[in-house]
Image (cartoon, rainbow, N blue to C red; front, top):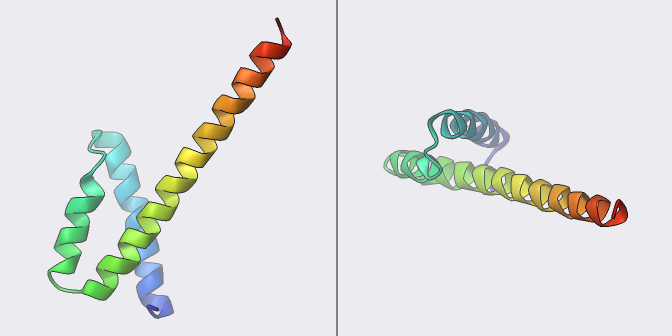
Amino acid sequence: MADEHVTAMANKLAEECLAVQKETGEDRLFMEVGDVLGASSQTLEEAFLTAIRTRMAEQKGRGFLAQKLKSFRESQSE
């Protein structure tokens, strides 16, 4: 497991990367960033990719729940 400083760097970079992805529409930008990191630090690359994947999974989970709730409320109003 990476030390706390590597994890903190990876988390910050993941947040920044997701913001750039959202603004630019490049939904696979994180893979390019991962490649850049991997060229010099496999440890940071792995921590970054973990941080990205967990955040993206959370976003998908929240989207799924929002859609379920929307569908439920629509069915209740009919």
